[in-house]
Length: 238
Length: 310
Image (cartoon, rainbow over all chains, first blue to last red; front, top):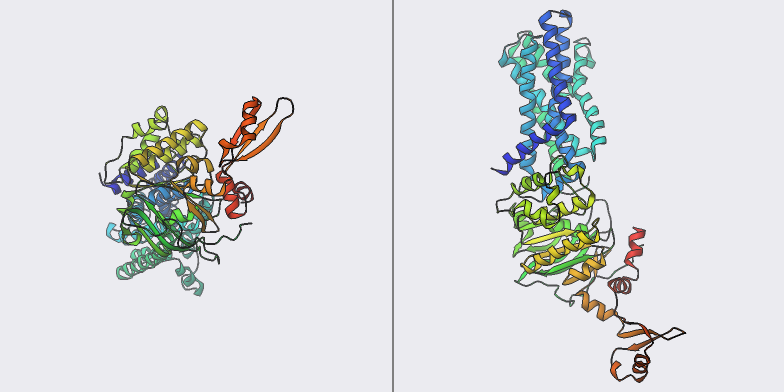
C-alpha cells in the first residue's frame, strides 16, 4: 500500500473515531434532510432561494472542515512533527488533505442542491459555482492550521473565516444597484452567489465567468495560505 | 543567566570529520527570525558510525534546535552538514528512511492503539520495519498494544515514542530526552536498548540534560551553552581532566575525621596505610569529578541551577 493511501485510510478512520466530527457529519446530513422535507411539503416557498443560498454559504463548506480539524488535531498533539520526519513528503500530505476536502464538499453541495431543489438549475450549471464554493473549505483547511496553535484558537478562527464566506449572503438582502454591494465582492463566495443568480436569470456566460472568477480568487487566497503554511512547517516563525 | 561561552578552538578533539563519520557539521549557524542572537552559533563536530554522541545542556541552550536542524525540521541554516557521506541539502525524502527521530514530548494519534500507531508509521517507509508487537514487548508495552494511546500515562507514551523512532531500523537515531518521564526501571530498559543499538552499529545522537544518561551511554559529549559547544570530549576524559586525583577517607572510632590523599603514590603513603590498618575506616571515595562538576567548572554554573532558572 502506498504511504499516501495509508494516510488517506488513516484520516478516514480518524474521522470515524472522532465524536465531534461525526456530529458535524450528522448535522450536515440533517440540514439537507430538513431542507428537502421543507421543499417536498411546499413550505416557505417565498424563502426557498434564500434558504438555498444560506445552506450553501453556511453549511456546505462545513463538511470540508473535517480535514481542517484533522490537521489541527495533528498540530495540537505534535504528531505532525512525527509525520514531518517520515518519508512522506509534506507537500503530498497537504495535497491529500486538499483533495479530500474537495471530495467531501463538492459532492455534498451537489447532493444538497439536488435533494432540496429550492433553486432549479441543470446540474452542469450547478457544478462551477459549487466547485468555487468548495474551495472556500480548502482555504479554511489550510488557513486554520496555519494561523492557530491549538484547537481553541482553531475553533475561533473557524468562526472568523466562516464569516468571510457567509457575508456573501448579505448580497441577497441589499439593493443590487447599491454601490456598497460591490464591497461584498471582496469575498469570493459572493462571486458564486452572482454566478448562481446569473444562471437563474438565464445569463449563462455571466454565470460561468463569475464562477471562473471565484475559482481564481479562491485559488489565489489558497496559494497565499499554502505558502505561509509551508513556511511554518519548515520551522520558520512569521 | 546564561554565561558567555567561547566556541571550541579548532584543534579540539575530532571536530573535522572523516570519511568514516556518519555526521559532519562545520560552522553551523542558525537564528530564529526576529532574534538577534543565534540559537546555534558556529558549531562544528563530527560523529563516527556506531558512536553515541551526547548533546548536554540546559533548556534553551540550543541543543534541541541543533537536533531539529540535523533532522531537517528546520531547513534553513548557514554552514555545512554532511550526513552519511552526503550534504544534508542533497538528501531527498529518503533521508528519513535513514534516520529515526525520538521526540522530547510524546506525540501520537491518541484515538489509535499503540500497535495502530506503529503500523501506520511503518507503512510510510519503504524499508522493512520491525515487528511492532516485538518492539512494544521490548519496552514493556505488550499488554497495552491494543489499547488507545489516550489511555496511556506519559511514561508509556514516551516508550512508544522511542520504539517508533527505531522501528524502521535507521542508521542514525536522534533521541531527545529519551528517558524523560520514565521510572527508573523503564529508563534502564530504554538505556539498555540504546546501548544495544550502538553494538549493532547504529549512530545515536542523544540530546539531554540528564547527566546520568550521558555518563552511562555516551562515547563523547558536548556541553551546549548559548548555542555553542563549551567542551567536547569523552565523559571519562572530562571527569579525569576536571576532577581531583585524590581519595577522601572518613575514619575514627569515636571522633570522625576526614582526610584526603593524592592518588599518585597512595600505596606508599604511610599515614594513609596507618588509617587503613587502624580498622576505623568509615568511608573511602576517590574524588574524580562528576559531569555536573565538570559542567560547572567549564561553564561557570551548575546545570541544575540553569535548569531551575530556565
